[in-house]
Length: 190
Image (tube, rainbow, N blue to C red; front, side):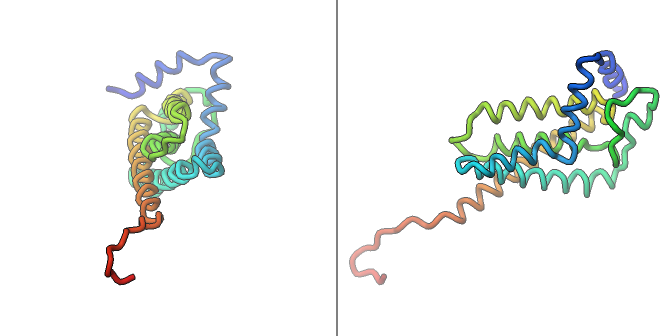
């Protein structure tokens, strides 16, 4: 399927009230700012500290895979470069199109919250971040800076980065816990 069919159909959704909302939201994801802020806030709260670490680690992992490995290797042109007739809502992002870094970061944060074990974290936070991640991916297509497959790949890379971060943080948390006292029987050396 031609991805421009989807992108061009989304252009029919533009309107005077929606354009500034989407443009502002998508710009909040520039350089992962929204998700970094989320990670830092969670890091600053004692009961969600582990989640904050997982979110920040996921962002680093996702950025490495997306921006340092995949994008330079594939160098896919952005839709706005191929079809310059579409009016841009945001400045043309630097770099190549595949995968979407904004979507990678968003799904990395969401997946870190899903996979990091923290029963004290409110489920509403995880659900809200997941919805925001999906909206971030849609906003990148709405703004004509990513193809649907860029967004899908970003969601996959981000989810895997979030999973890896959660597993890493869980493993480190288990290693740093003191070993339980083991009762010693009579006659054992202390």
